[in-house]
Amino acid sequence: MSFIKGLIPGILLTWIVSGIIGSNGSKGGMLAIEHMMIQGHGIYWSWPLFLAGTGLCWALFWMMDS
Image (cartoon, rainbow, N blue to C red; front, side, top):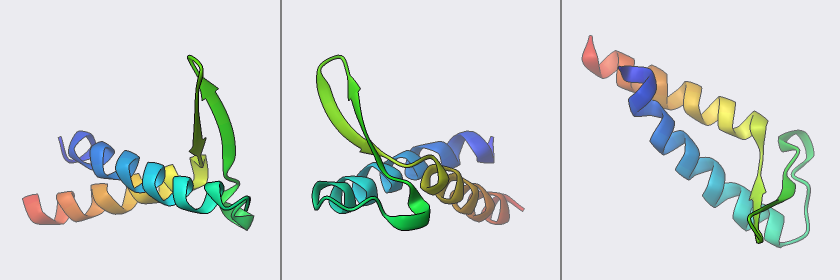
C-alpha cells in the first residue's frame, strides 16, 4: 500500500521539476528530460526522476507505516 501512496507524490514531483527545467530548454543532464506529446498536449517527463522520486516517497510512507 505504501508504494501506491508513493506514486502520487512521485508523479507530481516529476511533472513539476521536469516542467520547470524542460521549459527552459535544458535536458537536465542525468535526468534525461524529454518533451512528449500526449493527445496533442506537450509535457516534459523524466523517467530517472520519476523512479527516484517514487522510491523516495515509497520509503517515507513505508517508514511512517512501521
